[in-house]
Length: 439
Image 1 (cartoon, one colour):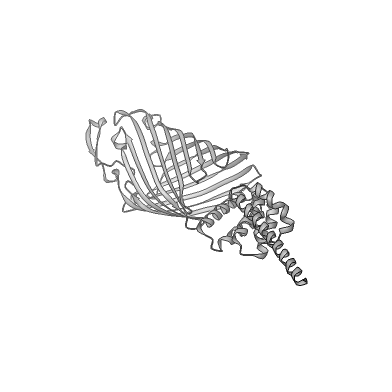
Image 2: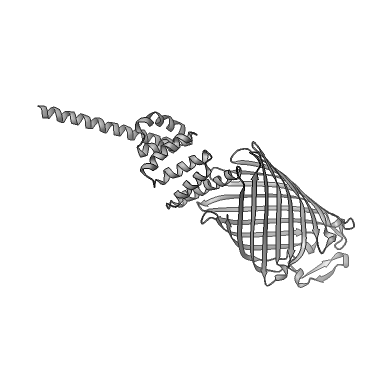
């Protein structure tokens, strides 16, 4: 009789224990389902009353930590995830989530260390790509609180059908000389070539306070055109300015300088100012307006010295699937300093639009197109007409990211400049492969 009562009691206790385990599993299963439905607030409300009883259970602490971070309770989330890592130091999900919490708390160094630790565990490519985006966010956050130095180096190899941007014909008729056909010299006709470039740059940002930062940078590109070295170029740029951030508005003012060399000879300098207002409506929508002034100086053709103005606006929208679309419109004006050559001056209007989309976790496809119309002010005495050009540009390609800081970009670019003066009509096609390393 006693044995029967004992067995019955044990059975009751076991059934009671099993029912509690089942209830516990039901709780975490429900919490997981809520998190999968992006209902973090409901998941947190479900789990929070049970923390004191169930702290130390890996699955509970992991789910509670994720829910806490999602609702902004970052400190509680860190405590829960630390309990997970105390029992499972190699739990990649817990380490990635605790890194996210540290980032939200502003502990950027700790967040970066945790994210990098997760990547070293050999996570799937899509997880690694997500971590890269968080690491980029860490870099952006650091730039607002301390002096940061960023740079890049890149190389390009490709083919260009018109390296000297010249007419695609050997002879043209010039009305100002009786309409007689003139044979263009070898260097005045379109020349194709295989080319390679080397480039790099440095950018520095120093915050003065939470709203104001000083910025500056240097960059340069050296291009070699194999077989037509007389068209080799070197372009060097420098800028310095100030950024002002007020809520969703970002204002910038920069002084800029460019030196352009052709075949190792100084060809043109451009110096001036640029200003921009950027409005970040939210994380997915951005609008901007800009204005730029440049003083153009040609070292060997001073008659072409001019003042150039560009002003316009742009809008960009990021969609939830990762697609991005953008468009801009602008006005430009170039006026020669020499009043005896007014036909060299022009006014213009342009539009530009493009989009990009994620092909996979490491590849982004893009396409950009633009149209620019330029109308000169006076009749050209050589062609006995007022010159008007319409330039069409299209660029398509992909950006492949094999690892953080590395980008490989194949690109196809097409240009067609339609003009009412034969000397300025041309088309140009190029295909290139760019390898870039940011640091």
